Image 1: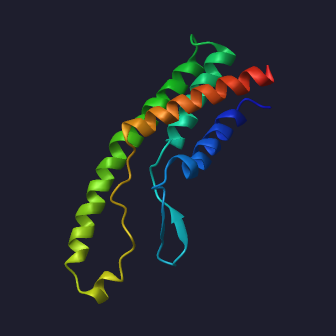
Image 2 (image 1 turned 30 degrees about the vertical axis):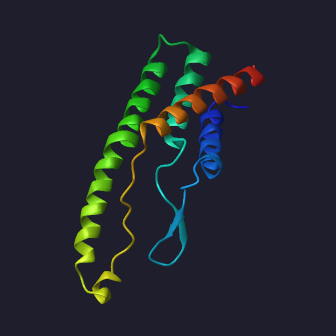
Length: 144
């Protein structure tokens, strides 16, 4: 198995596992009435992917090289997104929903559903990190 497929597989495993681990992983409808999964949930698939990438690089190349440094930079960026930026966007969603609620019912229908919870909880990020590391180590040992 090519090494670049491992983080992709780990991310997919994390995304699929949300259906089993997170009972609140519900869906909502977009403007056309299609079902769409919501953001967030247990475990964080983005975090699992990023930590899998770091683990693959560490196990295949070691930690004293530029590839590992770049993988760590990706982890920092994704953690910032998962924990901070999405929470910030969720606050905007709640504020906009409050403003939309003040409109007439006819005017409200013109606006799409806005998520109010986009970020991950710390436990969801930790679970994603753990899943990413553990599954990657298992896969690396199997293919080695």
